[in-house]
Length: 172
Image 1 (cartoon, helix red, strand yellow):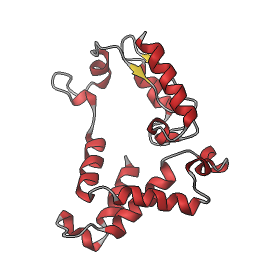
Image 2 (cartoon, helix red, strand yellow):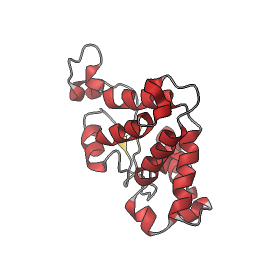
Image 3 (cartoon, helix red, strand yellow):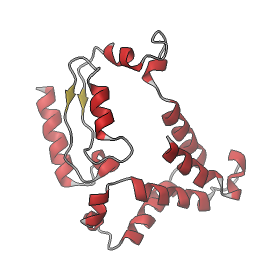
């Protein structure tokens, strides 16, 4: 999870962060964190086809500013805690599985609709497909989206339609 270290480092490098003891938001660090997400939140093809225009943005600089404003709306310590949780999350560490992620995934009894984006740069589709094979009865449905990690956020009407149809089908 090196990418998350980069995100955390961007926030913590701001002198105003003060080891998490800030009195005012560390805006320089949060803006840098937003810039990090601007580069990883979607996909290369998304940039090439200028899908940021579908968000009403006219340039990649406007996209960077959009991400910066989004990250600025969150608390810096909450973001660090979120990233730490994300980095330390391993289903195999659940009590009784002794670090065996495959065994833990295999113990899932709920019906699972696993719907990753084909272009997510944080969670590569091949790794997710491999992980899904251990979940009994999983329905693995790849979202054919260019919106990368943000595909499930509802920013694309095509993605929303795909998700709604997949969820409707899964629940029938």
